[in-house]
Image (cartoon, helix red, strand yellow):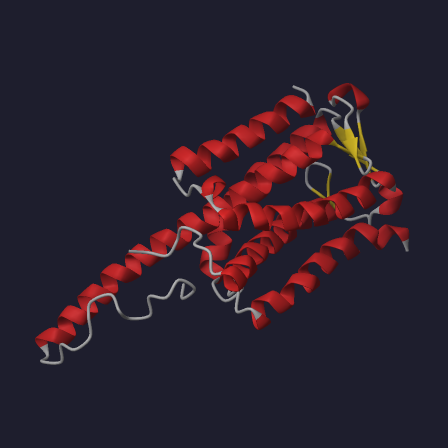
Length: 110
Length: 132
């Protein structure tokens, strides 16, 4: 049970923000190219940071509370997914706030 | 380098991207700060679970020691840097696509004009703010 807490929170973040895509027409998943291009530099930079921090013992993980799948460099699967899930949830939040309040984001075009 | 130094540098890089490199200027927009406030609330919960339960453990020699809901101050800087940078890239790519479509719409409207149907102004095609 405890091994699934981290993964469950990431899933919860994606599930909780999913209605924003549909009900508020956030249209984040509907623009997959823009989404992937936005995620790519963030995933590379922050995964690199995580690997550096693991290698230099800035932080460590309790393996008993992870599902146990390790990515190269000693990165737990959950951490890899964290750098995908959190940015997606962040963008959905931004688009939801824009949809509700009508505030300009800066990409409105000419 | 300590987590503290890297966290401050991460925030610095994100601010640099937003203000000077990508010029998205999210830091000057209400939409960013309201979104960040919402996300910060969720970060306190998620980070709190990760650190209070000991799923992630921090080396006390690499942080200053200030905490909120078990999580070190540095985690909140890390989160701020990641959120700002993600949203800056999102807006930047959206702006590029909007410019590209603006040009395409202009070309398309020009072609339509040449065809004798000039009642549609250039750029009017699907140019709403949420249309990307």
